[in-house]
Image (cartoon, rainbow, N blue to C red; front, side, top):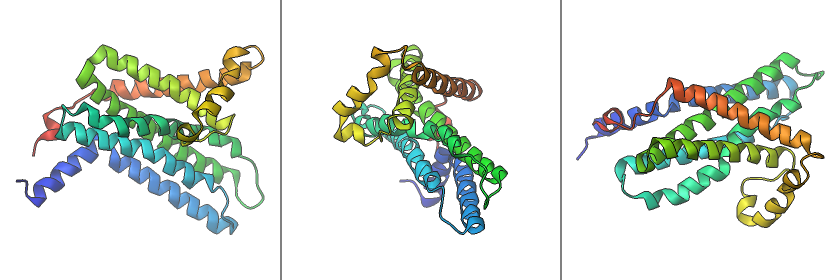
Length: 235
């Protein structure tokens, strides 16, 4: 049986491997800037910042749960279905934060450079929540089906995420609407595919944000190869 220090060390290594500490630090910085904005303006505006960041954390936490289950019971593939579905549904929220720059404007009570910094660190945090969680889940998929198919999985997920960002920004659908109104989402989202010429801006939006996700993810994956190995499991 593991002693408390061993459990603490193992948990620390697990969190460190999944970049929990720098992402948490970045999150605290976001809330610090947000609190500063409230103090300066004396109004609780930009409420979307903490809310969108909370939604961006959900896929990351789901990926941590999946990784923990995989390490404890690597053959229990069926145990990944529910957290994997939640991860996929909420993943677009992490990259959706990039679109919040549309709220950047000159205001009389807050310098524009302050809001630019707040939105930048929030977008930075969202990007890392997205790419780290995808990298974690791809590592699990790789353990089951191999490297080639895991990259096919990653590319499909990145494409779906770009599509999900479009659904959120243009059509104002939320992730939980997938569970309550999947037919409505499917009906509303078919228009760009049926009428691509009249929806060129929307298709361009999807291509841009899909490519942004792809490039940032490839950069991260290049710098940080998969390592579901002894470094993560040793006690």
